[in-house]
Length: 78
Image 1 (cartoon, rainbow, N blue to C red):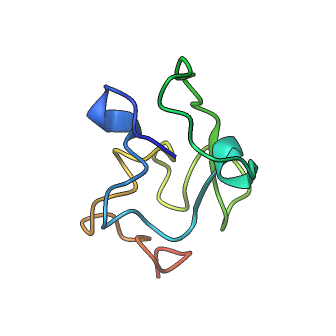
Image 2: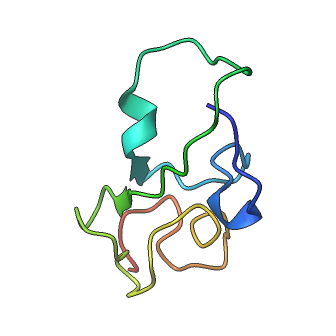
């Protein structure tokens, strides 16, 4: 999956939380660089099953790539 132009939605960040989920990760297709890229921005947190993480912040790649979030790679804030 290729990253979009906005770094906020970069799903290729090596520090991306393992709890972040998005619709595009379930598409089993080869990447086609000649095809127009969509803006797949439907993200959710595995721990809460909503678009809000355990810490009350929005679950999206830009937010979920920071180890400063209390829930980063833990699934909870505790």
